[in-house]
Amino acid sequence: MVRRNKALMDFIGTTRLSYHRPSVVAWWSAAFPGFGHMLLNMHVKGNALFLIEIIINVQSKLNLAMVYTFMGDFHQATTVLNTQWTLIYIPFYFFCIWDSYRSAIDINKLYFLTENQPVEVNVMDLHSYEICYLDKRVPWVAGMWSLLLPGLGQFYARRLITSFSLLAWSLTIYIISHELQSIQMLLNGTLSDATKVIRPEWLLFMPSLIFGASYDAYAKTIEYNCLFADEQRSYLHREWQPKNFPLPFKKGRTPDYD
Image 1 (tube, one colour):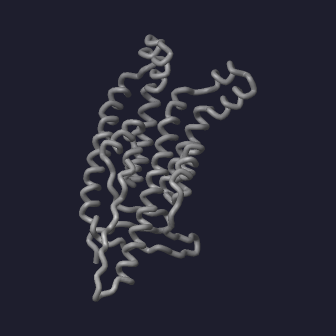
Image 2 (cartoon, rainbow, N blue to C red):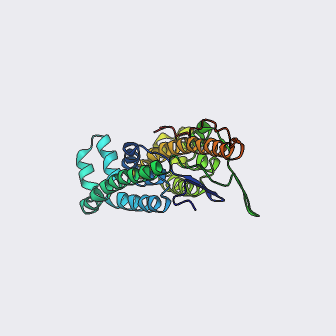
Image 3 (cartoon, helix red, strand yellow):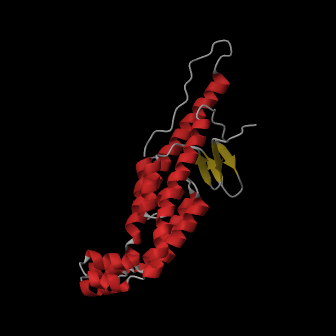
């Protein structure tokens, strides 16, 4: 029995141990706390941090204060800022960055322990409610769909937990921020009404969410394509290599797409 599994595929999605540059994971946690953990397939922790980030940010009026700061109204920025919630936000924010960095290092250690281990994963798993199969997909297509609506690229790559999570967060923020309603008014030529209806403190969540989701979809699609190639290589080596004539075999490594 294998002590440490290298990959797993089921009807929820595909997961594999892979190398992640800790600085990149920490950067995405700085952009939006929880994103770094989701890149590491820590879905429960990532979504919990997502929720806490939004609650503390909204209560502290941090995004709203940032909007006034960008406008040059520093007095109004200091007026709306809730210092009690801000003091809670500071240690939470840096903890998310530190914990994602530390977790990336730990997972990299597990990856190096299993690097020379053959990939043993079901390439097809049939259920009455889902057909699961391992295949190659186009990374830029996944990234493009998540740019249009966060979560769609993950759905294309069969990261269902991440997909449903990002779709739920995106729809929630779109509705509360009134972004689409504001865009519709702007297209109709009513600029004043468009600026009145928009909620900028919620709108500031969207850039990090959109670009983070696009990066996640693109990077994970490349990672799953490498898993497909590694599994095929392991299968051919196991089933077709002559026993009396060993062929040179070198396992591939997940490209450092970070």
